[in-house]
Length: 326
Image (cartoon, rainbow, N blue to C red; front, side):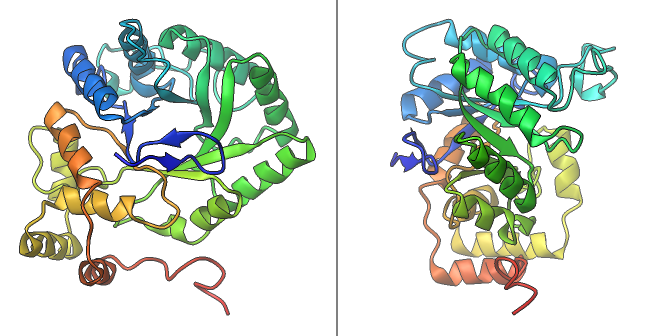
């Protein structure tokens, strides 16, 4: 698998990232370990998680996988996130979302929460550093001076190597980068946003901002929560998304059928080939799904198919301001 530069950093990653949102929830531990082992063996080295995935259970599962040794931690580019703390659940089933925040300052991007959240993630992950520490959302109540000071401390302590963002607008990226530049700090090296054939808003401002600042771009939800994956098997969330499919999705499935490729493969292949995209983040529930994802990123769509996809799912018209001004 051909590696890609991670933005303007010296890191190299595979053109596919493994997301862990289903680990310890829809995917049990043995199956999660199978997927992780397959990724490790096939050279998929970017592993994405978050402290609030399944109340911290996903991070803890990854920590147990790292503990098996064999270079698992050293060869992994480990990415986790900070903003929403793990919750205390009123039910053992995390999908019910019946829990409450542990405390009023255990969310957001205050210096206090950044420090405590990082320590918690390191403990659950069983490691002494995170390669990429991503701000999961913008915090409008925290000044960039406070955020960057907290991140600088973590970098100086060796607990964080790089800082990234997730779900930021183009304006937020510019604010963050200029504030970091004023402090002679590296700033954001990546942005992770929702991006797929049905949601192309990032093409307006976010992707251009990331490219202008030399950032890696990591799209998540490549199958639009299952709507682009064809008829799903077993997963209630996927079945609900598929049931809501519209005429565009039906036209898309007809196109996929005509070219002899599965809808999931086409959606992922399209995304992996988009300008500025470093590595789509996939969240497989099964080993078979992950192996299909691996094959899909190697698929090349010709210009005719790409043009038809643009007609079915038109984007916003290019980058801003050209998309809506002259």
